[in-house]
Length: 273
Ligand SMILES: O=C[C@H](O)[C@H](O)[C@H](O)COP(=O)(O)O
Image 1 (spheres, rainbow, N blue to C red):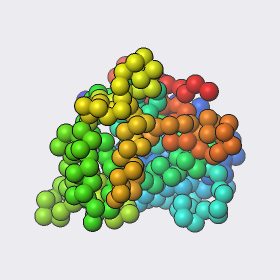
Image 2: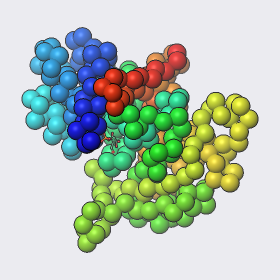
Image 3: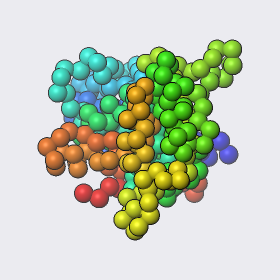
């Protein structure tokens, strides 16, 4: 069964790279997790000249992946100001009907978000388990990166907002204490009721947080306003092209998401302009 999931991730990665890897790419963002491994594999399999391309990692694992594939890693903080990435690929923990995503299940989200925001296009690659109509339908919590000193305070605020038993993520060996991110911060995993989309709100549902019911963008904003939060693992708002139409650069939301299905096919969702 595990190998069927891995085959699905690989199939999705191949289609995503075929459709979105640009000719003569200068900068390509590479995300984190288990699915992104197949994206790098698919890039190598394209057989294009990668010698002039710089790959921007989203954390330690991602950087090692780039280097071990024989590609050139350039960390985000060394990019000249104003550098625009041609495209950024990444995995996701869940994707809804409007292409909002939950990310951070593997404890990476801050660097993933700044890399996505610096790219013309952000592309998600996943398997069918992540394909859901609403966020928190199957996946259980929102990962949130917080300053260790503020963690308890953030937990209290999240409970006030309706999160059901938010917890600080621990290392697998309990004696090692809370898990640390690439920024040396903690991750809080905050369960909420399934999130509403903009379409739900337009149809009359209340996503303002009353009784713990939130619309995706409203919850993302409310969590980011808590002092002590570095970043939230909700990727929502605008896509890169939508932001560019307003004179900006990139967006948190993918322009397309690809899902490997159990029957071997690849399903996709695409943002409307
Ligand atoms: O923290 C990890 C990242 O956001 C990953 O992209 C996400 O958790 C999906 O990971 P995977 O590809 O292993 O399912």
